[in-house]
Structures are given as structure tokens and as C-alpha cells.
Length: 362
Image (cartoon, rainbow, N blue to C red; front, side, top):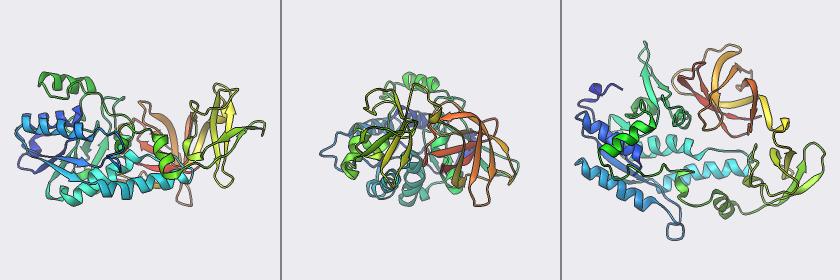
């Protein structure tokens, strides 16, 4: 990225305590910039009862800010997170969908609630995401992929608003993860060897199913073999299962794959075998399309690449607008585990520019 263009600008760094955002601080300071650091506090709802890594995160963030002589302020977004992101998650899960809380966290919290509280005072908000931006000939800012396909996080950013993208900078987005680790080691950063965080950010070390059970309880229902129509067993709640899931189903005579849900009848349909065709889809619809910078042309069968989960693989397809505002995605080969509620992230056919994302409906 062009660091010279940041001279004289006010920059806020979202410092999480992890190695990526810490190297962001180093890189900015190395270029003569003096950002202000902010630690966003969300955490579990009942910290006294649930084990959480937030205290350690804050200690790491404090040490990094101190090393570079920078200020660090804790911004409490706890209420906003539980009011907005958790409500979104629970509503989607209860309706039988497969939501992505981390995607909405970027829109609603990191570039949303934080912006309202403190970020509006700054020209740019810097994060440790593995993503890049570029400006086109019309002066528009685009979200583009990182050269590290494994760590690329453009899919997590594909629901932010255009004004949020204009304020966002990703100072390590052009690097490979190994480069970031090497810088942290060389500069003796306290978290140089700290493992990357896994799972949903607000849960800490809590098991996701335990979290769902706590807030949604259990709602037993039938599990049906989709090929034979015979009863396989009972589930404890449709929200404990995702389409495409194989492990953890707990039914004898497997392996079984979760392939369909009937929300009204509270039934889970499964398919038998190691790689059943019923676990795949080649066509599906998406709705509530969110374009980041500009929409694709309103034409049939435009070649694209896409993702429906966080992987290093970009899948090839075409996209066609439908009369009801939905879009039809036609993949070049069948895709495993397509689930309603998942975000389908749309890229150009070179998987370079990220155009945005939409929710899968069918």
C-alpha cells in the first residue's frame, strides 16, 4: 500500500492482542506514522462464569502499544455486540440458517459501533486483516484479495459498507503470514509466537453448541434418511446441525451427512455414504445482494469466482440476475454443503476484486 499518502492523516489501529494487528502497529511506525491504538472489548456475556482470553489479549495489546510509545484506549462495544451481532446469530440459527457472526462483526462493530464511538475522529481505521484495496481510474476504492490464499480475509469483509471500505486500510494485507511472523520475531514482539485465534470472536473458549444450548435450549425432532424416508434417530435441535455436516451427528450405521432441514416440521434429513450426491448442489439462489463498490453489469451468466465458506479455494461459476431481485449462481461443478443463510462472496473471474456478498436462499 502507499504509506506516503497517510502522512498527516489521523490513523486508528484496532489492536486485538494478536500478532497480525501488532505487526500493523510496527509497519505504520516504521513508516514514520504515529497511530492511536484501540482495543475493542466485547467478551462473553458472563465473564465471571465463562473462561475468556480477553484479559490476556488486552495485556498483549498494552505491551505492544507501550513498546512503540503509543496510546491505547479500551472501547467497550460489549452491549452493541450482544444487541446486534448476537441477535442476528440467534435469529438466523433459530430459523434454520447458517449465519456467520464474524462477517457481521466487521460491519456492525469494528467499522460500525467503534466508528460511532471513536473512529469518526480519524481519517483511517487500520486492521490486521489479510486483504488489500486498490483505486480504479474513476477514483473508486475496491476490496481486493491478499496474495496469501490461505489467510485471505476478504470474505469476512464483504458485508461492510462502501463508506467503511473508504476509511479502511490493511497495512499487512500485501504480506504472507510467514512474513508477518518473521517481522514479529525480528522485532521481539511479545506475541510473535502466539497462535491465531480460532472460532467465533465473542465466545473465547466456549463451545459453540454449549452456547446455542444455553440461549436456545433443545428442541428434539426426527432425523430421516432422505433416500429411504426411514427414521434414523432423533436430533436435539436443528440449530446444532449445519448442512454438509458429517462429524458429530451421533447416529449409528454411518457415516451420515446432514443435507436438508424442514423447519416447520422440525425434521433433519440425512444422507448415507462417504460422499453422497445429495450433499452437493450446482445451482442455488442468493438474495439481499450487498455490493461493496459497484454492482456487476445487469446481464446473464457473467463469469465470476465465489466462496461459500472460509477456505483457500475460489470456485468458478456464472451469476444471473432474476426478476424478483435474487441472483442465480450456476457453479461449474457441484459444491458440497451449500446451506441457506451462508454468505456467498462474489469475486471477479480472476478472484482479484471482491464485489460483495449475498445470503444463500436455496
